[in-house]
Length: 369
Image 1 (tube, rainbow, N blue to C red):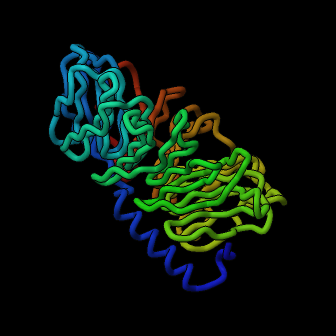
Image 2: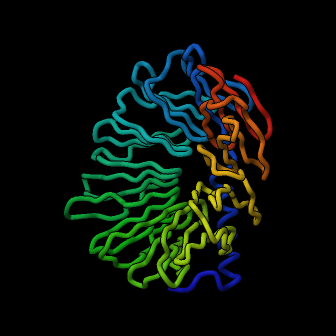
C-alpha cells in the first residue's frame, strides 16, 4: 500500500471529494421533524410551521432530516417527504429509513421507496439494512448479498453455503468479507479489494471511505473508491468514520483526524470522542470541544450530562439543567426549563416544554408549537 498524505495531489483529490459529498448529502437540510401535540395529533415541523400528518397517534414512526415514515392506526405504512403523505403498503412486517429512502419487507419481499418511486428489490429476501443512501439485502434465490444504491442493484458476493451479512455499513459504503476470507469495500458504487485476512476485522465505514487496522501489514489504513492507503505505519487504538473524514487515537493516545484533505492532531489527552458526519466532538481535561473549518472551539467548560450531535450543531444539557446549542461557532441557550427532554434533527433542536408543547431552535431563531 502507498503511504497517505504526502503529496499535494492526494490532498486536492480528497478536497474535491469533500465538495461532492457536501452537495450530494445536502448537509444542512431539515425538512421534517415529527411531533405529537397535546391532542396526540401527529404533525411535522419545518421552517416555523407545522403540518398535520394524521389525526391519530401512529403505532410507530422513524425519521431523518428529509423523511418521516410511520405505521398509522390502521397499520398502513406511510412516508412523508415534507410535501406529500404517501401510503406505501398495508402489509409491512418491518421498515427502516435512510435520508431519502424507506425500505420494508412483506414476508420475503423487500421493497424500497426512493424519492417517490417504489422498487421491489427481491422476492426472496431475509435480512436487510438501510443506511443514509443504500439498502443492503440478502437475495436467497441466488444466495447473494446485494446493495441498492442510487437506483441500481450491485452484487457484493455469492455463496455456496450460508450467507453472512456484511460486518459494517456506512453512509454510502459497505465493508464485507467474501469467499476465501477476501475482504472488500463497496464505496459509491465501486468495489475495491482490501486484502485476505483470516481474523475478524473491525471496520469503520463512513461516506466515501472505509478505515481499518490492517493485520497483514500491521498498519492503519483507509480505503477510498479506487485506492487503499496507509495512514499510520502501526495499528491504532480505535477509529471512527464520518462524511469524507475519519478520526482515531494513535498508539500514543493522540487524537488525530483526516479532515478537509489533511491529517491533523486534535488533542493529546482525549477522554472520549464522537463523530457524526462532518462533526467531531471530544472531551479533554473536563472540557467539551469541537473542530470546524480549521479551528478548535470550546463547546462547554465541562462535560455535559447529555449531548446530541447532528450536522453542524451540538445540543447539550447546560449547568442550569436547560438546553444550549453550539451552532455557527457559538453557543446559545435554547431553553432554561430544567430537565426538559430534547431531540435534534438536521440543524434543528426540539425541546419539549410539556406534553404536546415544544420549542424549536434553528439558525438562531426560536419557534413555539
